[in-house]
Image 1 (cartoon, rainbow, N blue to C red):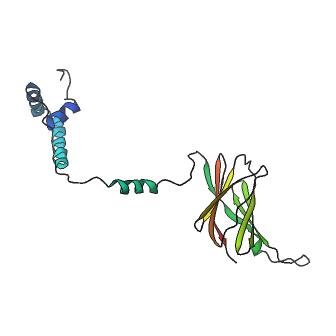
Image 2 (image 1 turned 45 degrees about the vertical axis):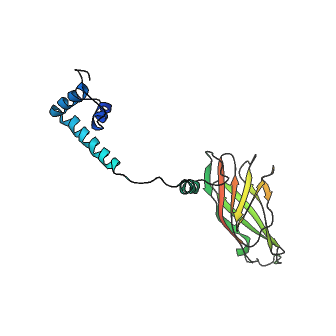
Amino acid sequence: MSPFSKHIPFEKLVDFAEKRDSGSSQESVETHLTSCSQCAETVSRLESSFRVMSTDDAQDVPRDVLLKAIGLFRTADRRESLAKRMVAVLSFDSLSLAPAFGTRSGQTDARQLIYSAGDSDIDLHVSTNDKQWIIAGQLLGKTCVNGKVELDGEGVSFSSQLDESCEFQLPAVSSGHYRLRILLSDIELEVPRIELRK
């Protein structure tokens, strides 16, 4: 310790509290502690911490439990990116329209749903075929180079690339609830719940 320093360096106080110092160094620290309340308080707190640590009988978490906990915070198939995430809301549903007088009112096989998210729209066409549902659509208002669409739910997961017109068609799925995401380089658009029921 330098004669010009006011306090003992923390590392030296740790060595003293752990009884790792010996001889003249130990004596000089003891002498300093009798006249410096700040260093004495630091040593007292260190000794108290070391006493608690020496009585600690905690055991390490089992490795498989630790890995499972870490896995809870990982999202499968999620790209590390700075893409902004937006949730799309339903702005149009052809099922809710009543036929207007003077227009053809025949039944159509397809249901049109339009979801809006910021300055983009997702135009979905949902049709049924042999108890299976087919979802096709188009992203409007965004460029979609290398974009892809993902659909998951009811124990299945599908993905498809958007074509040059930002259109897509997904494989047929059974009735149930699904989530649809469109992944672009700078944004992720999500339709959190699509219900496919007759």
